[in-house]
Length: 314
Ligand SMILES: Nc1ncnc2c1ncn2[C@@H]1O[C@H](COP(=O)(O)OP(=O)(O)OP(=O)(O)O)[C@@H](O)[C@H]1O
Image (cartoon, rainbow, N blue to C red; front, side, top):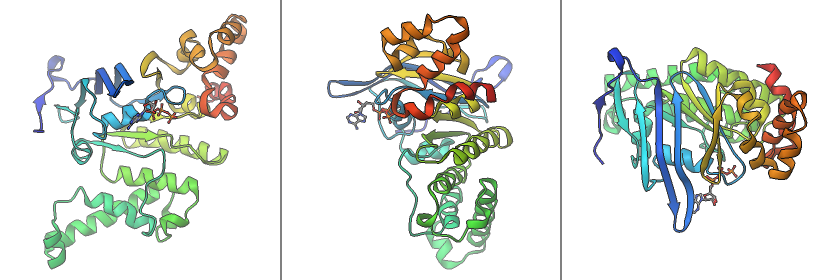
């Protein structure tokens, strides 16, 4: 597919507020409708969480954004910081990455036999223009690019808090450190948008708190817009500016974390209609707590039940 590049027609020439705009996105596998007319906007500079019960379509949405799946209907638009607009639908994964989207995976995918630094350096090198011949021949520009990748990889290892572990094998790092390393690797491709697919899965409570800080630093210090899939509601509520909720492939709510916590459709999706009615009708003083517990359900019910405290941490 050829690259569509057009200038964004913003008011007064301004770049659009939406860095990613998804509209009418429908993805089917045979008779299974995995995503149905999904509408979603990631605003420039924000952290948007995508939540929903197991099988709601969250990872399929990420796969559609990054060219792994090709939805049958709808559009996915990237409004670049340089003012250009790109259609991402059906693009190859490496093209999407070059255009400015980087992701991490639900199941960690690192080069286990390489050191932590090498994992990040390889990603940084994808940004360089030197081909394999230039590198083999040790041409000056190739050597310069290699030094630059090395410098960038060191910098990012420090940034994610792994500065003291650059020479350790990726496979020997703790689970929490491997998740950080995946994030450093994604950052090495210099993205405008970072997609994090359950970054807290398998991490301990301390690592979760550190991860929340890291996500906020990435967003605020590097100016990267973040799309976050996460079951841990304490984490979601502590970092997200807005939340979009999927259920059976459909968007059932979008809003601030506290709006979503109190949304009847959302609480029903997690608890079922009967129990949702019980908790939501319990009275205004209980509503936040009840809804919080409701949104906290799904795969991670026990952990997420603590989500009600997360709102207070913001
Ligand atoms: N390649 C595929 N072929 C067939 N069905 C698929 C495929 N990928 C996803 N699905 C189906 O699409 C639905 C949504 O799955 P998806 O993994 O996107 O959900 P999810 O919200 O990320 O779930 P979880 O929270 O458990 O990770 C599920 O019913 C899943 O079985």
